[in-house]
Length: 132
Image 1 (cartoon, helix red, strand yellow):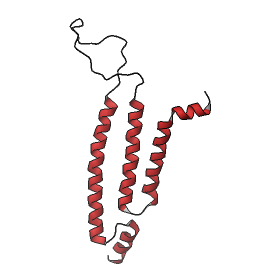
Image 2 (cartoon, rainbow, N blue to C red; image 1 turned 180 degrees about the vertical axis):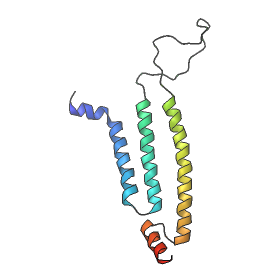
Image 3 (cartoon, one colour; image 1 turned 180 degrees about the horizontal axis):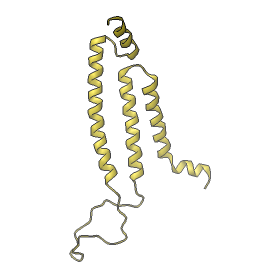
Image 4 (spheres, rainbow, N blue to C red; image 1 turned 135 degrees about the horizontal axis):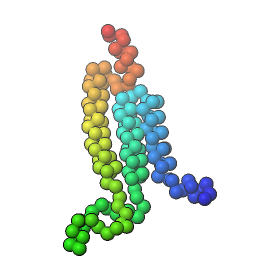
């Protein structure tokens, strides 16, 4: 296997790594609270994509076992490759938690902007030190 084949076969993982690094950079390098929240959302989206990508089973089918009167136990034919639905279900839960966390973080950012007149973290700290 050449390095080009290896790289092209794992393109989704390289995209996920790039998204994670972009999100982490935004969180670390920016002082604006809204931008930090958006950086956290990008990082979270990359983590969700990572889990969903790893859960993909090549050649797997949905884990829906048809009812077959010939097999009263309810099991399908042997040798059928099923995909595991658990990672996808967990990522749906992570999306819901992420939306709630984003809503709370944005509400706090709006409140901070209302109290300090800015959404910049360093300006809010300076204002707080001067007025305490």
